[in-house]
Image (cartoon, rainbow, N blue to C red):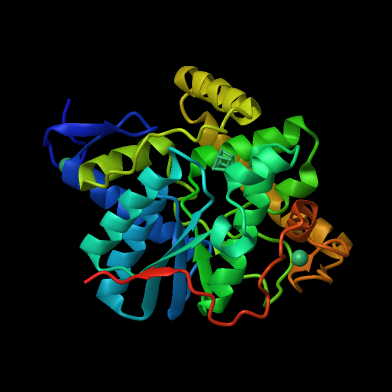
Length: 322
Ligand code: SF4
Ligand SMILES: [Zn+2]
Ligand SMILES: [Zn+2]
């Protein structure tokens, strides 16, 4: 079997069953990402894009693509932002990859840590609070990403979420009857436009995990496979395994889940938009649904100093490539 376009040696088989060679696959991938950006209006002509990087292959892939588009058209400013939660034996190695990658590409990378911003690392918080690590981690990371992206003047926050992640989230919300949570999914997240929320976009929305892995591999993007030691919240893992098994038998399942979801998403957003009442946290001023945002609630329990809301020039470690 040869590449469907040029008869070269194939390296990747698409969902459709057709195979592509190295250069045709890279072109296919980049084209599809650009099309996703265009069709879902993820990014405009002029943007200051902050890419949230974890050091994994997904986020470095999206950073790589946006950076190379920006180099050509010069109307986008692309910088990287990483959060160091403070997870021993895990985040350090990922951050090393992110630093190395940004350095070779000449991309500015900002790193902010839980310890530096909140006074405690995630490891320390987990010991103090009787909460699931991921519940603490997710809330505080989202909070930091949003506030820092805003401080840095971002117009958009791009993340490395792929089709597999989205399909899992859709199914998880369905199985747990969390449809309101699903209303916040999609290639552009959120239901309400609010200038304090930096809109999050997912340029890899239609790319499968396998495709991202292949792209990263072919491009020499290292991104590790270290699992977070707290990643034992196995519900997502179970859903992932189930979907993988199903996909193996019925090719295209994940894509169908996401495409079907996209058909009902506008209705979901409309429905929950009229119900959602946006308030602002009494402590930190961030948009939230209650009186106090979840981040401040957690920090309150910790007896932490709270979020440095007034601190203008919060100094994260800034690393400038080249
Ligand atoms: S698995 Fe949980 S604790 Fe680990 S990085 Fe992800 S959200 Fe944080
Ligand atoms: Zn080819
Ligand atoms: Zn708050």
